[in-house]
Amino acid sequence: MAAADTIAEDKEEVWRFWNAEPCGTRYLQPSAGSLPQDCGRWLAEHFKAHARARYALEPHIAEFAGFRSAAGKKVLEIGVGMGADYLEWLKAGAQATGIDIAPMSIARARGRCELAGYDHLADLRVADAENLPFADNSFDLVYSYGVMHHSPDTVRCIEEARRVLKPGGEARIMLYHHPSVTGLLLWLRYGIWRRKSLRQSVYDHLESPATKTYTRGEALDLMQGFRDIKLQLVFSPGDLLLHQPSIRFQAMAYRWLWRVYPRRLVRKLAGRWKLFLLVSATKD
Ligand SMILES: C[S@@+](CC[C@H](N)C(=O)[O-])C[C@H]1O[C@@H](n2cnc3c(N)ncnc32)[C@H](O)[C@@H]1O
Image (cartoon, rainbow, N blue to C red; front, side, top):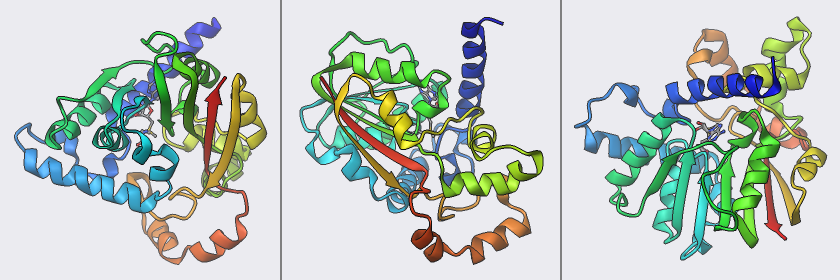
């Protein structure tokens, strides 16, 4: 099979996964996907609850994204998911465009903006990070949080982000890091018995199929053509088992593990084994 066909097939799986369950859906209960359209107030409250949970579990986001200094800037967010960060760009006064490959995510993000009274400012489109529908040198800032490692051709995603940035513009990209405690947990659960490596365990079992992870050196290689590259490692909620167990992990044994998990010890001993790699860099 030709490489292009393989990529298209992989991408369809990614599309299918995220379209069935837009990122963060677990914070909406019961499943918002099954709600009638007229549940506006209910949904508005749940979007707020999603944002509260997100920023409590990942307090580094606001500073990394730089919402506060975004007023007047042309921002592109790649992979908006349910649109929590996208709405923050609008609230901050940015001229923000958001894309996602999954129509369901774009629908949720649109709904969120509408319910918050920002629909007149929202520019949300279904599009592919590997083929951005924007002219060269269009944006001051390109932001993408936890997205590009899911797309089959991550190198292409970063090249596209660079292409649409204005010279001197900034990219802020969160990629999954290797190694991490999350990777270790997945290896213990799925990899060890099947003789899979840590990386393969993440590739096969973390979120959509074929999720890639990067060492810091590999991330630096990805950012060719950028200058002032800064890398920062941060624990993910998964490294510390801070969020609610997902549907996959509802058995008694997992619930027990969640209760006894030695979070303080993990924080102390994990060193660089953190899942989130925050990359910021400037286009030459
Ligand atoms: C883990 S979610 C992150 C969403 C959001 N940034 C957040 O932090 O909640 C990954 C998102 O990337 C989107 N995605 C994956 N591959 C993509 C691609 N090639 N182009 C655009 N979006 C993509 C998925 O549809 C999904 O919404």
